[in-house]
Amino acid sequence: MSEHHELSRRALLQAAGAAGLGSLLTGQSEASGEPSSEQGPSAKPRAAAPVLGTVSEPARQVPVVADCDVCVVGGSATGAFAAVAAARLGAKVAIIELNGFFGGVATASLVNLWHSTEDMQNQQQIIAGLSTEVFERLDRRGGLEVVKGKRTYYALNTEELKIELDALLTEAAVRPFLHTMFVAPAVADGRLTAVIIEDKTGRRAIRARQFIDATGDADVAARMGLPVYQRDQVQPPTMCVILRGLDAIRKKHPGFNVHRAIFDQQYAQALKPGYSWGHSVPGGRDETMLAGTRVHNANCADADELTAATIEGRRQVRAVCDILRENFLDGRGTPLLTLPAKLGIRETRHARCLHTLTQEELLSGHRFPDAIGNGTYPVDIHNARGGGITFRHLEKAPFYQIPYSSLVPQGAQNVLVAGRSIDADEGAFGAVRVMINCNQMGQAAGVAAWLALDSGCSVAEIDTARLRETLKKQGAAIL
Image (cartoon, rainbow, N blue to C red; front, side):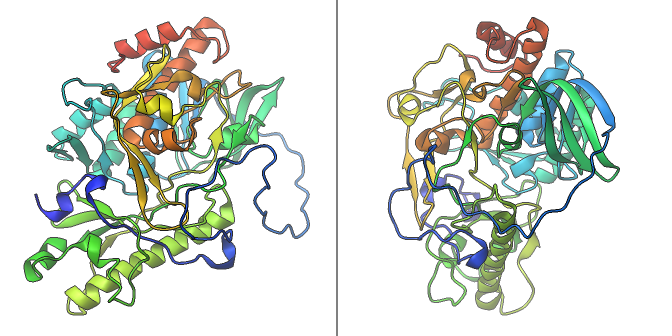
C-alpha cells in the first residue's frame, strides 16, 4: 500500500501543530497537559468581542416561505440523512444549508474518509442504513474506494458525494434551502414554531412542527435558550487540502513521507509537531487529501475566532505547499489543487441532553435500551494545547452504542440535536464525533421527529422501542 493510502490515524506518527492566531483568538497557553474539564455554570465566560454601540433594527413581518412537518437546520451528511429519513416516512421536510451544496465536513472540509461499519472482530456489521446506501450509490459511479486491511474503511470522492446527496434529497421530495443562513428561532410557550432565515431573497421564515439542529454547533438549541455547554479546551480544527503529485515526488525522492516532511524542522516553514493523516482521492490522478494542519485556541462557535482560524489554517496549508515546492519540486509549479470551503471543525458547543454519554460507557460497550447507533472508532482526542493525540481503544466489547437520550436537549419539546452537538464527555465525544457515527444520529433524529409527530408527543416522550424498530425497517443496524 502506498504511503498516501495509509488510513489508520493510529499508524501515523505526526500531525500539524499551529502557528499563533494573534490577537483575534483567545490566548490560552499551548503548554502540554491534559485538557481541562468542560465549562460549568460557574466557569468564567470567554471574552466577547467589543461592542461598538448598537443599531436599531425596525420590527417587521417576516414572510413564511415554507410550512412543513420537519425542518432540518444544517445540511451535512448528518442533516441530509435526518431529512431523508423523515421524508421517507411521509413527512413534509425542509433542510437549510449555508453552503451551496450538502455534505458538511465530508464535502465542504474535504474529509474523505468514513470509518469501519463492522465490529472489532470484523465479524458483524454494526452500521448500515443511509451510510451504506450512499456507499453503494457512490460505488456505481466510481466514487468509492473500499480499503481492506486490519479494518475496512471507505474513501469517498467528495465531489461525487455532493451530487449524490442532491439526488438523495430530491428523490425523497425534501425541499432544499441552499445558500441559506439560520438567523433566529421563533419560540412560543417553550416550543420552536419557526426558524428565521436569510438568503438571497431576504429574510424569510420556515414554519414546522418538529426541528432538528444539525448545525454541529448547537446553534438552534443555544439561540432558543436550551441548555448548552462548551469545554474550556476543545479539540483544534484542521484545514485539509487536496495535493497533487505526491506519488511523483516519491518516485523522485525515495523514502519521502509527507507526514514527516511537513514537521521537519530543517525546513523554515515546518509546522509545529502535531499529527497528520491522509488518503488518495478515489477517481483522481495522483491526488491526495492531507489533514495535517492544526489551529489551536480557536473557539469556532465565535464568528471572529472562526474567521481568524480559517485564515491561519490556509496559512499553514501554504507552508506545507512551500515545503514541497521548494524542496521536492525544484521550485517549480504548485502541489496545491483544492482548498476546502470550510475549516474542518472537531468540536464547539454541545447540547445538554437527557443523558451524557461517558467514556466508561463507551469503552465498556454498555448496552442502551434506546440505542440508535453503534461504532468502533476509538477515543481520539487531539491535544487542545499542543502536539500529539490520545487514543483509547475498545478492549472490553466488540462495539459501543449511542443512545437516543443523548440527542434530546433538556427541556426540548420539538427539537433534537444530531451530530457533534451530542451530549458526551470528552472521551466519549472523541469517538462518536466522526462522520460514520454522526450519520447514524442524523437518520435516528429524522425518524424520531416523525414519531413525535405521529404520536402527538414531545421528543422526550416517544416510544424508543418503536424508534428502533422503524430504524431497522429503514435498513439501519439496530442491535
